[in-house]
Image (cartoon, rainbow, N blue to C red; front, side, top):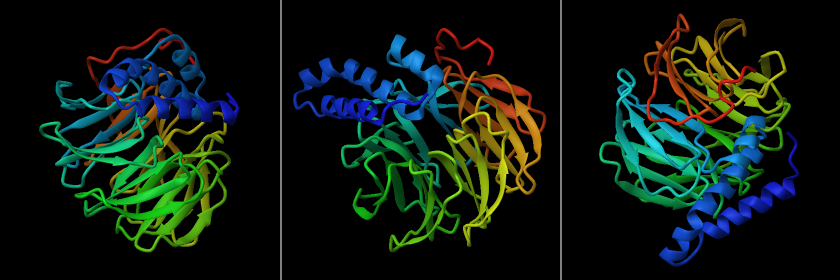
Length: 359
């Protein structure tokens, strides 16, 4: 769905103003309306046909926007457009923790490399860092009063990178919240560190992915082949390749040193929401209307998971044996990455009308 940019910008501005109310009473009264406006703006920005219907008929919308596995594989976090973040036991489906204090749709979540902290980015114009055991808020970053679409920890856990619609990607000191670096370009929908922490990749609405020096902020080169807004990108574990997914219905793999396109994935019929490398770098998971697992060297399809109406996010377990997916139908599922067998559906997540319809 092609939504006029001015309308989306207007809704973003409304959500921003509502979140900025000065008194607690006004904030409380504005909170529900603010979530409705923010959710609709988020869906319009994503261009999701199902999301458009949901945003107009229900609020807050309970779609899963992000899933993240803890580094030790013992916990799975989910973020939702109804502003909730929950941590689960991926073996039993038991809810272990729920965060409170987020006042906008959650757009991204990420574990620190040591698994002790959890970072969230949301439509309330903040990125927050939390104690992953207690749920205590440790740090809040005011990211230029703009929604935070993506965030990522540096491999050593000392820095946090954020991408927002405020035409910027920023790097922060993870302990103090001090801003270290600002990369001013187009609206940033996705951001990722190279495995060695020396480079950052960003995906933007201008159909381009860029690679930056993470210390100086110098742009090293751009990837000019995506055919739509770059919704996701990921480095291969060895740092030699970058995968991108876009609203232009393609996922592509690139040489991370030269920027040369190596090959394209998909049939060009569906928007790509997430791309994710397996821990050994041999496979790529691609989230769209289905989740496909592909050979990371040839692009050959190895496996397809059919269960969600629209898959918004996918992530590998640290050992590469399982996949976790999240969908617009507010479902989070765990799968066997070899057979495609569904292992678990996380409880306590409410679906809505239309989710059982076939694509």
